[in-house]
Structure formats: structure tokens, C-alpha cells
Amino acid sequence: MASHLIILPILLPLFAGLLILLEARQRLWLRRLTGLLATALLVPVVLLLWHQAASGEIAVYRLGNWAPPFGIVLVLDQLAALMLAVTALLALPVYLHACRGDDQNGANFHALFQFQLLGINGAFLTGDLFNLFVFFEVLLIASYALLMHGQGADRARAGIHYVVLNLTGSSLFLFGLGLIYAATGTLNMADVSRVMQQGNLVSPMLLQVSAALLLLVFSLKAALLPLSFWLPGAYSAASAPVAALFAIMTKVGLYAIWRLWPLLFGHDASPLDGLVAPWLWALALATLLFAAVGALAATRLAALTAWLVLVSVGSLMAVITVATTQAWAAGFYYLLHSTWSAAALFLLVGLISSRRGLLADQLRSGNDLHPALGILFILLAVMLIGLPPFSGFIGKLLLLQAVPAGIFWAVLLGSSLIVLVAFSRAGSTVFWRQQRDIFAEKMPFSDLLPLLLLLAMTFALIIFAGPAHEAMGSIAEQLMNSQLYIEAVLGEQEVGQ
Amino acid sequence: MEIMVALMIAVMTGCGVYLILRLRTFPVVLGLTMLSYAVNIFLFAMGRLRADAPAVIGEAANYTDPLPQALVLTAIVIGFAMTAFLMALALRAWGEFGTDHVDGKTVEQDATDEERR
Image (cartoon, rainbow over all chains, first blue to last red; front, side, top):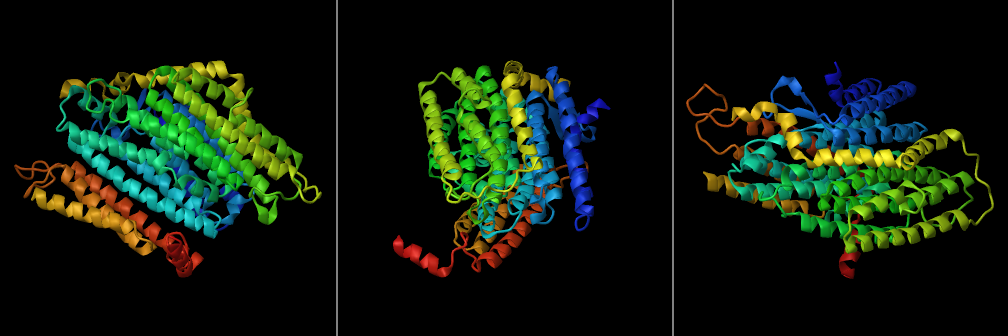
């Protein structure tokens, strides 16, 4: 029974989404209740899975009991469990926020939300490259529709760009998969790595091209610099809960790179050794700077938040290319912090813009806002800039400790400074320069609850920074040791060839 | 045969990329369709090209790799759904902006942009 738990994060949103579709037109409360139950149930499930994975065992679930490399496998290692936990813990507050009323601005929000979770969870669990493509498409098609949720010309424009870019990316993904199959004769991640290590490749060049193509696609999803221009437009056009959920989407791209790094790029003398790391390192630093400057140029709060998502992408990508256990552990910690706090800021921006009428979230002075919003804003700003004593500070400190390169220090600290300036300007414009002295309406606690949940999670990251960092270290160690993964998936298969 | 298939994929990919870079949404949709056709044939060719070989073991002495064919089938279905969605999206954007420009610009705006350049 326990072994079937692995597939639950995929099945639960799938069935919840289908059930909600049955109620597509009437009874809003039923849709909300089903969605809420499914999203809330996901939390204990992923925590159980996390508990199971934390023992260090890599669980493999064979769909249809076909032995890998022939069948599709789901693999639960510590990294997958961590990503599932981040997603589930993010989804619940975001969903609560959406149920305050944002969900009524368009059709099918509840079902799409579940399908989005289905795609994300599937992408984290799968151990097969083609299956990864399929789950990417599932999460993308849900995200296309979610992005357009709530109508509006801005969303239609951002939606077209986002969809066309991602469809082109999907085509490239398929080209890459085809080449991998041609080079190695398999699409199972562990098997690809094994074939590569044994050196019986049809042609090393085919593998190099395919790996480069896959990285290109994942960089597009993660929004690495030359491919990141879509992100600020898309994320700032989306409605608040959708943008908050999308905070995990760039991390799906980063996760895919993280997953494949030890399997494909981490071996000496492999045809891929040193092929991409120098490029990605430079591009990651460029992304970091570019995003900070973008934050400075943002004219809307949502755009500012979107640029901050990009800042975290740059930092994390730089950490991935360093590829030491310490760096990756720091990266995982920073990933938790940046996902949750960026999502919290998106939700807060949603609350602010709903109280400012036509001004919405533009960086212009408007009517007086409730002090609670101001306090939350400054809390989140301090957190995202990376000032003590919050999780952003610990995260950035760990990053700096783990990556001793001078240029990384300069870029990370420089970008933090620029972000600080951007935040000060935004905060003082929106909260201090009021034209009229009309005190805005009351602040119901239910509006703040989802935000406070997200904040509580980041506070837990500060309080339990020690144990959390230790756990991240063990994730990084397990991930780094690709032999563990290959043996867990393929087992004694190796004898058979 | 290899050269012909390779050339065909190349031409289709080229056409697809050219069309994706166009200004109006309809050519972009066509371009994406072309690109997905190219990718489907490309996937098909990944199992090596063989004539007169069924993808079933035991039916003939000579058989071809069935896996790419299964992959192509999945890719076709997904590509089809995505094209349909994009089509609907393009129509919606056309209704929203009153133009089929990819940035939602009208003919006049576009002309002034050109002049500025």
C-alpha cells in the first residue's frame, strides 16, 4: 500500500480536477470545497512522502509493472520529495487566496488549478524523459489557460507570446528527445546515464546536440537570460493567485536541469563534460544583473515581483553550475525561500491593487492603504532583498559561503543593492505619498490568512535553519551520487545486457 | 532515402521558423504547425529509416523500432491539441484587439513604429 503512495500526488489532482469539471457550471461552493479538499489532502501526502524519502531510500514506482528501461517509472528521491512539498505547501495558501473571489473572474479556474498541480507534480516525479515532456505539456496547457484567467487585453497579449514561445520550446524539446533516443536507444533518465557512462554511444556528437537542446528548453522554462524576456510580461499580467502559483513554474525548469546534471553532465571524460557549465555560469550571472536592473525599471508592483522571480532564477542557475554538495544544499534552501516569499509578494500585490481602484498596482501615489498591508510589504521586501534576520538573508549567506568566486559575490550583492533601491522607491511611492487622507476600508483577517500562512512557512525556515540546511545537504549528497539513482531505477538490470 | 527525408525535415523546419517570426498570428500558428510536422517526421526517423519493415516483432523477418512510432503518436495528439488552443487564443486576441498583430497593435500604430525606425 505504502508503495502506491508515490503516484498519489499525480492521481489526487487529476481526479479532483475531473470531479470539478462535472460541476463546471453550477454550485461554486462545491467546486471550491472539492478543490480545497484535494489541495489540502496533498499536504499530508507529500509530507508522508518526504518522511519516506528522508531515510535516503530511492523509491521507484513502475507504472503497469513494466521493468525499466522499457516501462515508465516514477522515482521518488529526496529532491523530488522536496519539490513536491514546496509545491503542495505553496498551492494551499494560493488556493485559499483565490477562493476569496479571484476564482469567479473566469470559467474553470478550479479544474485548471488541479491540472496545473498534476503537471507540476508529475514533472517532479517522473524518471523518463518523454514522460517529462508529457507532464511539461500538461502543466503548460493548464498554465496557458490560467494565465488568461480573468480576461483583459494585457493578458491576451502576454498569453499569445507565452503560448507561442512555449510551443516552440516544446518542438525543440521533441527534437532533443529524438536525438537522445538516436544516440542512446533509450529515454529512461537512469538508462541514458548508464549507456553514456559505459561509452556505447552511437555518436557522441548526437548526444551533445541533444543535451544542448534539452538545456535550451529547460532554460526557456526557467527563464535564463536570452530566453527570459517573456517572464516579466506574462507574470505581471496574470491575476494574483495565478502569478503566485507560477512562482514554482520557473523552478520546474531549474529542477529538470538539476535532475539531469549529475546524470548527464557530472562525469569526467563524458562527451558532455564541460560543454555547458561555463556558458550557463556566465548567463546566470547576466540574468541576475539584468533582473535587478529590470526591477529598478518596473512601473508596476506585479512587474517588480516578476523581476524578483528572475533574480532567484539567476542565483539558482549559478549555483547549479558550480555543482558542489555545499552549493546545491544552499541552492535548495534558497529555492524554498524564494518560491514562498515571491508567491507571498504576488498575493500581497493582489490585495493592494484590489484596494486602489483604477490605479491598481502602478507605482503611483494613490489613496491611503491599511497599515497591515504596509507592514507586510516591508516584511516581504526585507525578506526578498536578503537583509537579516529573515530567510532571504540566511539563503544568500549560504549561497555566498558555498560559492567563493569573487564575481558571484559582486553580482549577488550588487543585485541585492539594486533590488533594495527598487523596493524603497516602490514602497515609499505606494505607501507614503498619499494624495487623499481617506482611510481605506477594514482589513478582514480572511484576506490576510493565506499570506500569513506563506509567511509562517518562511519563518519556519528561519527558526529551523539548522535542521533544514542539514536536510538540504543530504538531498544534495544523494543527488550528486548518480550511481544511487541509476541502481535504484535499473536494479540488477545491468546483468541483462 | 535518408537525404530526402533529411532535406524534407530541414525545409519544413526552415519554413516553420520563418513563419513563426511573422507579424500576424495566423502565419505564426501555421509556422508552429509546420514545426510540429517536422518534429514528428524527425522523431519517426530516430528509429532509423527502414523500408518494408512493420513495427511488429514476429510479423516479418525484418522489423523496425516501434518506440519512436508510439512517441510520434503522443506528439501528434499533443501538438494537435496545442494548435487548437492557439487557434482559439488567436481568435480571442483578434476579438480583443480588433487586429491580428502579435502585439495587438493596429495598422496605424504599426505604421508609426515603422516610421520611427
